[in-house]
Length: 124
Image (tube, rainbow, N blue to C red; front, side):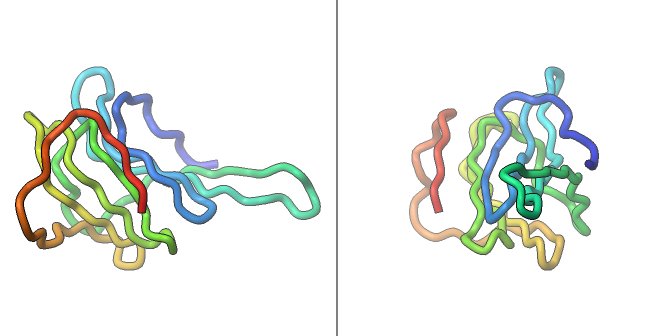
């Protein structure tokens, strides 16, 4: 079992195939930008599971620290999308992380910016 994520509130969380991830949040002193993935494995011929955490170490600069944001994974679990949140003020930006390339990027968005809110929900 790898390092457990540090305690935090208002993190962006998402589920992918056999994995759970958490990004950012408020650690009691400031917003953070770290991401952890929990891989879940079914034990052979057992009705129970094992889980292991790992910190994600991207090859490039992560998004600015934030809390109260939305996170979701694509169906294959290879890309994570973050939207909005609180980052010194409410923001409506989109960030993406590729597990295949181990990199963050900001996709181009078109149209009007969406209504900003500190509540969050996501489905992909």
